[in-house]
Amino acid sequence: MMPSLQPTNADSIAHVVRQLFCHPVKGLTPSPVDRAEFRANWGMQGDRAFALMFDDLDQTPAPDTPWLSKRYFAVQNDWHDLARVQCHYEAAAQTLCVTLDGQRVLEAHVDRDRPAIGAWFSAFLQTCKPSAGARHPQYAKLELVGQTSGNTGFRDRRAGQVSMIGSATLAALSTLLNTPIDPRRFRPNLILETAQPWEEFDWIGRRLRIGHVEFEPIERIERCLNIEVCPDSGQRDLPLLSQLKRKFRHTDTGIIARVTQAGTLSIGQSYDII
Image (cartoon, rainbow, N blue to C red):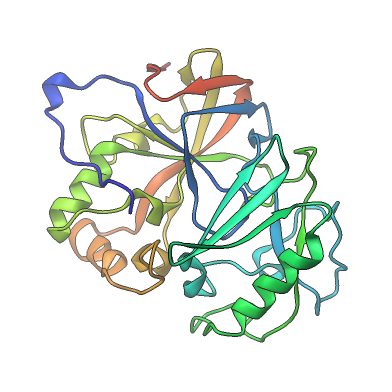
C-alpha cells in the first residue's frame, strides 16, 4: 500500500515535486518512480505506453495500434478487479513483471512474449465482474498493444497531457473521510506540494515550470466512481465521489496539463507558477 499524504503546515510549505507515478499499461495501477522524462506535446515518456486491447471490435490489435478510446481496452474503471494486478516495466530489458495479490505470476518480454501476456490477462479477466457502466462488459480475448520505442501512448486524451494534483487537496480528502487516502486512486503523474486544497485549480491559464520542464495547466479533472476503488483490492471501499459532491459541490480533483518544454525532472525538485 502506498503511503497517504498528510496535512502539512502551510508556513513550512516547500513548492516541490512530492511524488511521481508512471502507468506502463493503461488502466492498471501505477508505479512510483524517482525521476521521469517529459516530451513536449506528448507527456511522460513510458506512461500508458502499452494497453490490453479486446480483439472483438472493429480494430485489429497490433504493436503499432494508434490512440483509441477506452472502450477498446480493459481498464480498471470498467473491471475493478484489475486493481489487484500490479505491473512493473523494466524499460532496459523490455520486460513486464506482473504480480497478483503480492505473488509474481508473470515475467515476460513485451515483444517476444506478447501471446503469453495476452493469454494471462485474458484468463484473469474471466474471473472478474465488469462494473455497472463498463464500456465493454463482455468477455473477449485480450492482446498487448504498444511499442517499445515509446512512440505509442494510450492516455485518456488524444493530446497526451499529464495529470497532477496538490498534496493539500489529498490531505483535505483524508481529513474529510477520516482515513488516509491513497493517491493512486486519482491516477496522477505528479503530486506537487501545496498549501491549500484545490490550489492547483488556480494554475489553469498560467505556466508551471520544474527545472527545464514546462507545463501549461489546461483544465480540472472531473472524477468518476473509479476513485472509490481501492488500488490494491479492487473493492469499492470509500464513498469519495459522493462526499466530494456533498462537501465541496463538485467532483473535481487534480488538473490536466500539457507539456510545452521537454526535459527530465525528479522528486524533490522545486516548481514555480508563472
